Image (cartoon, rainbow, N blue to C red):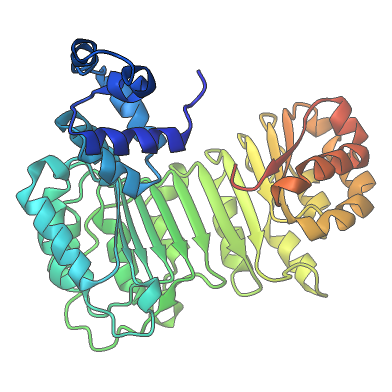
Length: 423
């Protein structure tokens, strides 16, 4: 079924709203013919038409990324007000104190909103050079955990707070439905990071990127570790692994001690000179449960003298016998062919590479050797070799044709895919 044009739906919502009709679809869609009808005929057309709820939701879903159109739809009638709320309040971003107070008031006094919010995001990225208001300690954790009853994702962007109160972690533990936690460009002590990760009882997906370790000196009360997270997915993009003072325990050690090595199925992690030993040890500990692995290399790690042996000494894929998908940062990286040769999983189905449009020439140069590695006997069960690239729409066909010519055997086996990164 083709999706109706978004502009047509916006126009429909606007006309329904300004006409003061409730669901008067016939008078909108047949307005030209109505001009020639007699008054009795027009009264028939102006009869209310009730759409099924499934169609209401379908229309709101189409406009879900356009808040202004959703707000227009909410003014049309009660049914569309209810349908639009699902998408208007599904993803909430709070950037300042005024926004927080207004949202808190809406949630407390409008119970029908409480179970609509699925993602709550505290985003200070636009105010990173201002004094950060202690959102979590003083406000959010006091009211929202008991109000947002079906919240699934909690995200913090550029939040820097020190000396978290013990009761804050206990308050956050009342977010019993949160399964996804993101900590992006945030700064607090590593102990407090561990406490946050341990606060959410249902946490299964954790993402930490560019964490800033703040000194925890002067803290009078210990950070409570309330729950043991059973992660299924971990994204860790840090050139150095966050560690407690004096390096006594890092984040990967902490997750290992909490039993995550037997539950983790998907890992996306950055490797650098500073963390390669820690990351390598953690990846080896994961073993058979791991299903998807993505390795990223910070800067040009692996290209310089001494980097490559250190990298290859610490990454061994022979223990991951149930691996189904492997993603590598760049097909021309010096470690790529060695890592492909070390795959021991008979269930591997997808190998994916990321690269930029300007790297296409480099890919062509190494294509013969890379294709031999990808068509080796231990990879004969591959269902897809995917090249994910950031490109403009006009480059799609040209890049696809270049890759087909560079990898003729993969193309002949119908396992070569060229996709836009993020699709």
